Length: 260
Image 1 (cartoon, one colour):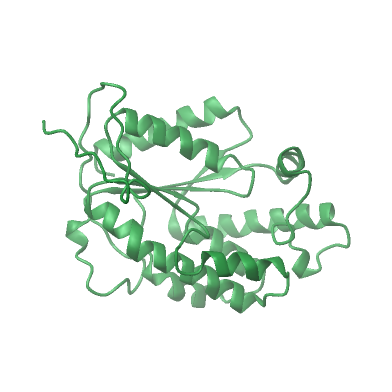
Image 2: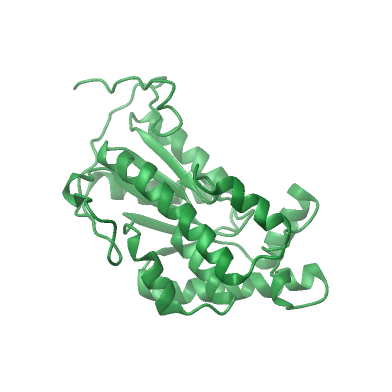
C-alpha cells in the first residue's frame, strides 16, 4: 500500500496525516453523496470519496474534546483528517465575532452571517477535503444554526431552503447534555455564561442563569424536531468522556469501513 504524502505547511491546517503509530489502515468505503437541496453548482458528487462526520451539541457539551480524541484515533489509524466548525471561515469569521460583541445583531443578520460562514467553509474546505479522500470532522454543522434560528422565530422552510447547499453527512451525532450540567460546565470553564447561548436577546428571563436554562431546553426541543427530518443520532453526553468517546468510535468505524 502506498504511503500517504506528507502535507506541506500550507496544507497542514486543512488535511493532517499522522504516522507515529503503525496500525492496520482501512480504506474508507465510498458512499453516494448528495445535497440536502439545490446544492452548489459544478460539484461532481461522485468524486467526493471521503467521509463527513458531524458532532453537534451546545457549548461545553464536550464536542471539542471528543473531536480532538477522534482526530488522534483516526490519524493514528492512518486516515487523513480535516476539521471545520462555526466561525472558522477566512471570509467572515472575524467580522462575525466583532458583530456579536455588540449584542445588537438582528436575527436575520445573525442568521445570514452564519450561513455565509458555513458556505465558505463548505466550498473551500469540506468539499476539497472530501475530494482528497479525507475524513472531515465538523464541530457543529447546519443543525445548530437552524435550531438557534428556529428558537428565534425564523421560518423552518426558509431555513431548509437556505441550507439546501449543505452536503448530507455520513454520520451526525448530537451530544445531549442537560441544561443544568451545561451551566455548571460553563461556570467551571468560563466563570460566566455567554449572552447569545443564554438567549438573553430573546427576553426569556431577567436573570442570565434562568434564561440559559430556558434557552437550552428550547434548543433541545428544536433538535428533536430536526432529528425527525434529518435523522441524526442523539448521544447521552452526561456520561464520562471515555464512555462517550468509545461509543462514537464504534459508530464512526462502522461508517468508515462499510456502507450505511
